[in-house]
Amino acid sequence: MTVVLIGAPGAGKTRVGKRLGPRLGYEFIDTDRVIVAKHGAIAQIFAEYGEAHFRRLERQAVAEALTHDAVVSLGGGAVLDADTQADLAGATVILLTVSAEAVTARIASGKRPLVTSIESWQKLLDGRAALYASLADYTTDTSDRAIDAIVDELAEWVESNTEEHR
Image 1 (cartoon, rainbow, N blue to C red):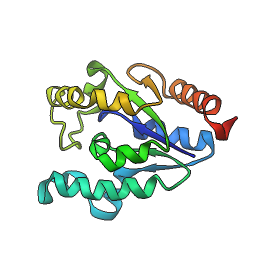
Image 2 (cartoon, one colour):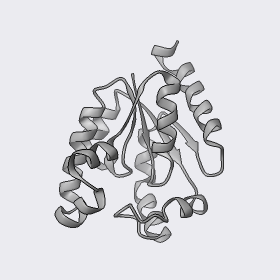
Image 3 (cartoon, rainbow, N blue to C red):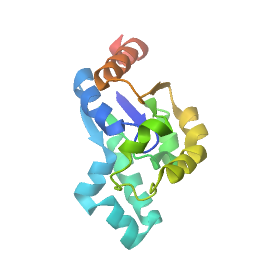
Image 4 (cartoon, rainbow, N blue to C red):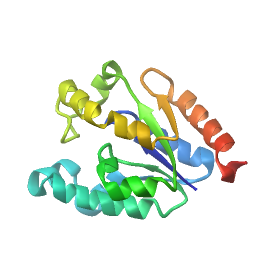
């Protein structure tokens, strides 16, 4: 079984996935970290080769990750790819949402090339929110809840709503 975490930058996909994978008995794969390990820093890829090149690398990482029984965290823009959208039909997809107020501190590191301010984050989210929602089997907000409570909620939902856990 593949459980996929999607959502805007700063929603907590990596943080939640690191705990959800072991909780469900699956490995955790963060596609952004796969890209970094193989190709270098994402901001550097954007700066040197552009977004289109990054999206090709991302698509390869996503396609590979989705072949595993795992909890997979996708970069915020990975769902923009039509092939990825089609691939997600065979997975359990969880959308993590976060408020603008809560995400402000999370995006302050400046490591996200498409998110340079809360305004750019909001614009990005506004353009993707409907797509995120259309792909999700389940949605939960990570704005102001303890990580353990979020992981407990998601594990319970996966275990009660997927064939492999019945």
